[in-house]
Image (cartoon, rainbow, N blue to C red):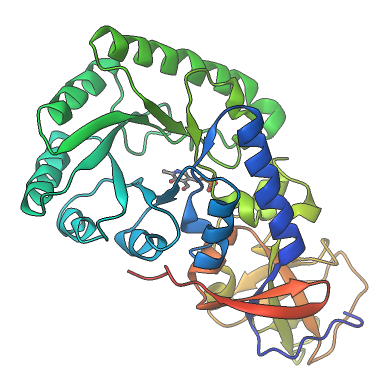
Amino acid sequence: MSGLRFELETPVPLVDLDILDRNLARMAEYAAEHGLGLRPHVKTHKAPRVAREQARLGAVGLSCATPREAEVMASCHHDLLVAHPPVGLKAERLMRLPREVDLMVALDSAESIEMLVAAARRHDRSVRVLVELDVGAHRVGVPTAEQAVALARLVKARPPLVYAGVTFYPGHIRQRVEEQPRHIDRLRRDLTATLDTLRGAGLAADIVSGGSTPTAWQTHQIEGLTEIRPGTYVYNDRYTVAIGSCAREECALTVLGTVVSTAVPGQVVIDAGSKALGREPRVEEGQGFGELLDRPEVTVKAMNEEHGILDLSRTAWRPAVGDQVRILPNHACIVTHLNDVVCGLRGAEVVERYEVTARGR
Ligand SMILES: Cc1ncc(COP(=O)(O)O)c(C=O)c1O
């Protein structure tokens, strides 16, 4: 790859800070334009450096998946949603967050309500609760409005818990953007019916929290939604490009790797394997685990933990040992999760390094 040379030990994640800035600003503008609160999910970056920027741009709060993320993000925003059922010791750990954090959790069972209220009472801490709805992703969330009413009632009867509203994750809407309207339409109708039922039961939801990166630019069509929670949009990735939710130039995160071997005839091996890129599902069958930023026709076709094998069948380009390559990963969040530090670029210059502080448990 002619000219590409960073004085960095590889593999290492690189973030183009100009693209990151644009991605952050664009989503903040979209949310503001449609009167939606933006509560970005931090699982993509796990970095206070990025979270503080999201807060500066007006995020109403941050979404976290793990207690560790919440502990780290407590220094970035006072309003935190833990969008994962707080079952077992997690509930207790969350109660130890700094007092100034206005904590909110998502849950979908009577058991988790009882665990949460026991922990909240032990710590004399008020906690806002969002009842999780299953709107089609079939991961977590109650499937019927009646069950949502029952849980909301239970929360209301368990001070210091405070019933704040409902939440959902449209993880089933991962089609190409032009194929999404009928799924969004169905979601809108189902959500409206559930919100009506809750209102009828005297349990109107103040907060209706939903959204993802694949659906991000369509979420203003979902009536009743008060806030959105995209995460991947900060960096984007090969998957987000493939479904048309962003342009390739809007991908901020790449992995810098080095060609370490060409000894096996017809083969080029780089030092970025599954422990650098993640073994994420292919975008489409045969599309590999990542593609070169400057040569999209070259993919990482196979991996061991520390080795990636490039597919050179669609190119005449033949790199040499020592050449560097930038790989656009299938899934940005996994790359972040695998690294302690990210290098920030302006143009071709590494101008800063920031920590992925909230990784791990
Ligand atoms: C509960 C929840 N909210 C929001 C998001 C963000 O979605 P995306 O990664 O599509 O931006 C996720 C992603 O896994 C999630 O699990």
